[in-house]
Image (cartoon, rainbow, N blue to C red; front, side, top):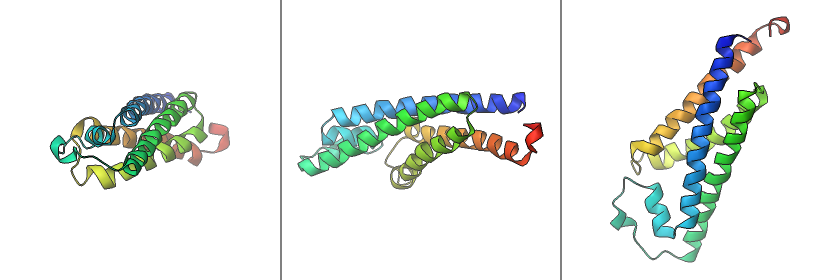
Length: 150
């Protein structure tokens, strides 16, 4: 493993840590708010007056589940970042699956329709995609080398 590979993994780990902490915070905000506040926290590009409503308790429960998923997904990526920093190649895959798949849903259902502002939402998608590309580049280049060169 070259110094460039190690640097790429460290940068990826830092990106995943930032992404994870932002998502832990988002999860806590969503779970601690009522449904209107939770929707306003997520869909920050939508006029808050359009989201102010007396939602059924089931809607609040579903939103709280989403907040919980943001929280645990963020925590898993922070833990994964520690292992990526330590050059654990399995952590690259686990962290990318958790953070990356959470962000695919966000991108498709929230970001692309225009319900959010660039910061922090879209920026966090760029952060996770960058972390995935950097770490997968390392994984792929190490996989292609003969075992004696690793």
